[in-house]
Image 1 (cartoon, rainbow, N blue to C red):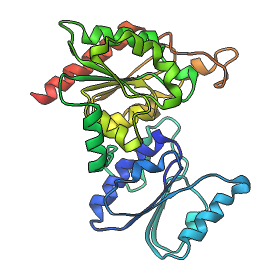
Image 2: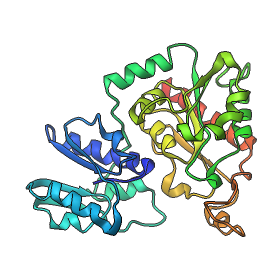
Image 3: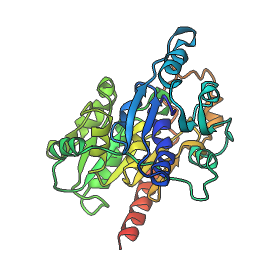
Image 4: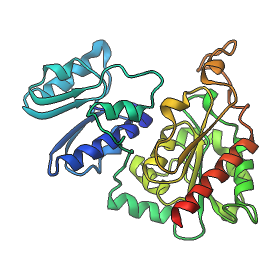
Length: 315
């Protein structure tokens, strides 16, 4: 049983990949929230995928119980720490407790099996997803992927700043000179991305907003050369696909949610997570961006530093 939110679900996939390798041929049943569940459609050995929608009076747990209680499980892994998992018939079980508030989610997950090497997230697009992505992002010049949205306004770097960083990184003589710029977001987030789209030359613009389901988007990200975006599910998906990933942080804790991987990095505001949450009148539903302390110069420096690491890793 894994997460409801896309980002948390992606972070759990490293542990899932470890279990697939540890138990070859295992038949897997995976439970996740309805938004995140499609991420797992291509998992090797998947026998059943349960999209668990919350219901009033916690009746969704009864729904799940009816589906899983008749089975005698070899191993139950519950990353939500639910009581239900203690009631199932299981030879072995690993149930997530309360983690360290300052520790990265990947490290918290790795302790569940006492893993010495924290497992990096991984996604499994199918051949159909890969073919769909190839049509949307055909072979050609390098691609800079930008995800300008997030699940609430305070976490969103301004679209104009994304336009500026795209222009700088793809200018003549820059790290990604002449690169195409792919803009990714959900369909309902198009308004937030429009200023960025308008600033990109038409011959280098890849409008991938609402381009497909989650695994198609993962496959699209896998065809890009560098990702820059706010702390979001897309950021974690890019890192899980092995794309050099720069996450932008302000009112979310970098130490817990920074993108994970050998070519992943984070740039954050000079103000700490705690300082931003102490902003007078702070309320996620109404607060405007809290990311203005993160300048274009700071993001450019972080992106160039990450790109140097990419070049070194390839040499």
